[in-house]
Image 1: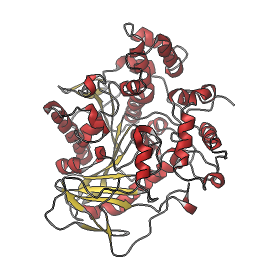
Image 2: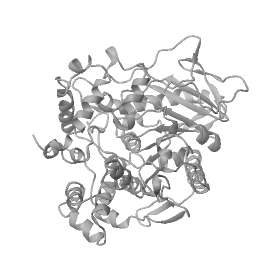
Image 3: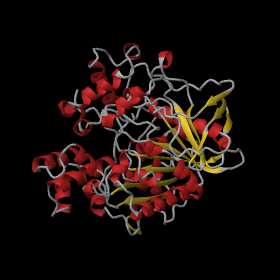
Image 4: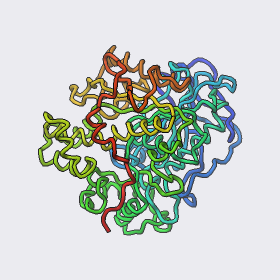
Amino acid sequence: MTVAASESSDSSGARPEVRAVAGVVRGAREAGVAVFRGIPFAEPPVGALRFAAPRPVRGWSGVREAVSYGPPPPQAGHFGMDALSQEAPGDDWLTVNVWSPEPTPGAGLPVMVWIQGGAYVFGMSGLPEYDGARLARDGDVVVVTFNHRVGIEGFGQIEGAPPNRGLLDQVAALEWVRDNIRAFGGDPERVTVFGQSAGGGSVAALLAMDRAAGLFRRAIAQSVQGTFFSPELASDIAAACAAELGLRPTVTDLSGVPPHRLPAAGDAVSARMDQWAERWGQPAYRTIPVSPVVDGDVLRVTPWQALSAGAGRDVDLLVGHTRDEHRLFTAITGLLGEVSEDQAAAALRFLAPGSDGARRYRDAFPAAGPEELYELVHSDWLFRMPSLHLAQAQAAAGGRTHVYELAWAAPGMGGALGACHGLDVPLVFGNLDRGQPAMLIGEAPSPEAEELSARMRAAWTSFAAHGDPGWSAHDTERRLVQVFDTRPAVTAYPEEASRLIWQDHPFPVLPLIGR
């Protein structure tokens, strides 16, 4: 994670220097843009600042080299992220990266600030799939990515610590953008925050947060993860994680624990979360140990409540999901082609809304077998319906929103995964041949993939620049949606059967259901 530059570095020309508020940074020129990596936006959250809200970074004298990504925060053991984080030692976890076509104060370019996904337990901005060069160059925008605390460090409910530290890190990064981005060629009045999965859930949370008000003009929420915890549920899960270390979930007990040990404790609890199903409910069934906490302060209400009350009315919103959100997870867990009737029944029992939700799914999809029902209810509960409801809440409150669905079937891995979760990431960034999500595209990106990626990048950057992605706004009557496929089309929302099943579900705060 500390490599200085990509293979596409330009050797000609002087290296760009920018005077940020804290000091001068020197970057590099790569793929036709200036790039600055690893700029701290807050003090390292370690030592006396462990589990504290982010503190403003102290300034430096001279010129700071900004060619290497900062070390990622401690990571859960998914997809080898824990090993990656330990390969890049250091505690300067809170850093930003900037790609700019024109790093001069007068350029006034739109700004796109990315929040990566990772179920709130992993995620780092230095992954190759998040390289912002192509998006910045082709879209004539400034792209910003950053690291924030995840897992117990960022979202564990710890006595003596502020809740939602990961969200507070995100606000601090956006404050850095507000205060610094003009020097990098960006317009602080035209900031778009965009994110996918837990990053999409974070975008939704930021829309609801008083602390984030005014820090961005537009928002793009891709595959919004719809889980928001009550303080009681979050505290109970944190207690189980701390107990793995023989400790209590307090700042006093956990401050002395080596950072890499906390994600391991979380992984140990996650591995047997089904044991707590009667106590923790849906998060235990779906193995979700942390999520943003609706604590009444940092996050006062859920995003759907906030937007319904008009919190995001002045923020243009682009929101959507993939068609086959859960197919990837079915494959990862070894269930592709193996889902039994009992497993489908359990999924419907745990996740379908209301006392008759299982029956309504079976009635709405009479030809669906166990695997299709299993994937439908998982997709709807975790991503598809939270995304749709966010758009509907915004539209109902008088805000402007545009909706999309990605329906293009991924050709990689034999075409078995359809339009699965995460497929939008390489398409939006244009990184079709690097990073783990590129496996969904296939070894050699096809002209079809390149064309679809170009359309999505054009829509995202046009929205960031002008608030218009190229199709009609969504309303509560026609419900028009841009479907991204081999042949794009604007049509009525295609998942109507699911919409009707979930139309009265409020996506409430997830409670502690057993004592």
